[in-house]
Length: 293
Image (cartoon, rainbow, N blue to C red):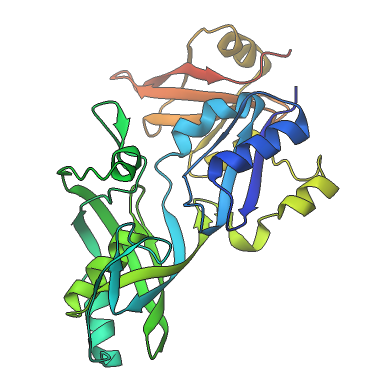
């Protein structure tokens, strides 16, 4: 069974689930999942995991993300972007560039953000967007997000384009609305492309047509999503032990999750290293992807 990760360039108009279905049909494989949902109207990087690699999605969930977004002044919608129904309009004075840059910089660091009603967050077992489509609006608790960087790319008469790097769980639609509020103006997100998820960059993302044309080459190795994990290379007898679910002793360095390779540098899976008072460490298998000898 094929296993690995595809750096998909999701086109606008498709849901993330549509992309998963496309990959499932193309590779004739049931075990397919994605990391980091993109709105249907948005485009950009969507890592898709296939085969045993789907077991690694949880270790990639916390990866930070980068976006390029366009914000348009003068109105707000029920969805927070320009695909929704307009619920308010306002007149405005176009902000000065210096004011825009000051406001953008004010978002850097830890922020609280109220998720939009049109989101997949579940409350009481129901997704918020399902309630929103019925006309229901419920109170949402603020969530902590982190903005690592945000910069103005360009401005125009009706809005601006900016780049942002942020933590998981950040809604760029809500960020656009919040930026507008600090500029004393209603605003919506009118364009969005995700330029990076963890190590996966827009420049290397493949269109659906490119994936069809090069099915085998499109699939990266399963450990491509784990570049932020330290690596441990095991001897032959150690590899056999962890593949059979046994813990082994190893030299102590930092405790935590590691990616494990056999003596031939084949990826085995995820391990947990725990340092002992004796100065050694115990390496325990957590997720084994390869059990081949």
